[in-house]
Length: 416
Image (tube, rainbow, N blue to C red; front, top):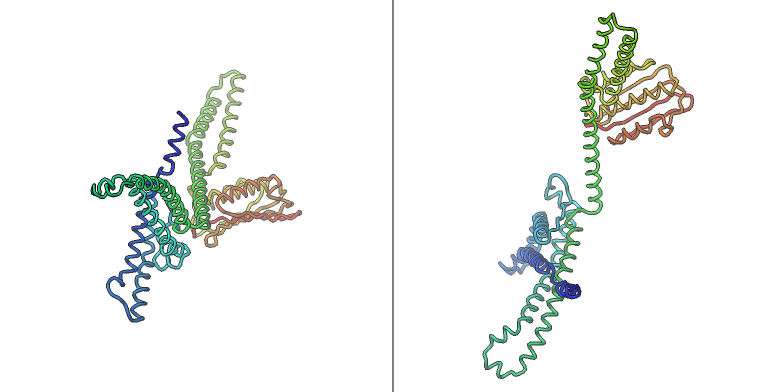
């Protein structure tokens, strides 16, 4: 059973998809016939004799075909999509280029090469293959044609049956050859059109980089939006419940004066832990996304960080307009982490934060007069800070010689 299936598959292998490939080749021939008709139209209408008339008859239709290049490209892409299911993407993204821009582009040159050189050659080969199909079908059905001729002719040619058997055998062989040729030519045409009508390797890489950049930006925005949602939920939910619990415990301490000492100690401990939990939750909420940043912007949020720092911090923010929420959040966390490093490691007496905007760049500079020696790879949090900055295509540099001072400079891209 398996042997017969393999034989049947081997027998029919050349004909799988042969009809689809032949129809694809036929539509390609029709397109090139239309182009050939345009090129030959002046010669059909009149016979040019003068040199200027010959040049006009040659160059005029050629210019028409060149200007119709974008239309021919769309027709060819539709042919590949409808006949073979092959989708050839356009080499450009966004708006379609104008005719002049298309003619100057490398993609336009590749497409014209297909329409004026490769396409006609492939159509010529397709014509040969289609003619081969016609001859093969005629040869394999020769016995049908013989029975249509007069009986007198058959009686006068006693060897016609043997001759017809040879022709039928040749027709079957030609059918196999044309089945293979149709598929091979369709594959060659597909590879050629993919290279010439679609984006080049460089254009594909550029498009891939653009797609990755856009997807990364969407991911960063989604993560920032999720942090803001968590901050709101904690602030409006868990934090408010803890505040209510602390208030109730405080009221219990003040009003229940006849409690045993053990019970009073339990209430005191619970009240203290509730206040500590509120304070820790407040730090957590500010670490996720401070509400003041969303409501009042970077100046107020950074001033809040400076006010909570255990050393004097000068803050100077000069922004003509607010950047995007994602860039604001990155700038806030840069300053927050940098000041935390100053407090933990720098042994500084003062620090300074400067935020300015120069065109499409948001510049954040955090400096201190500490002992210096900070490096992004020394485990002080600067490595994570560099990754956060890089997530929005920003740059971070650290200038921290031993003995100080330390200057952390961050450049963040934002719309002008």
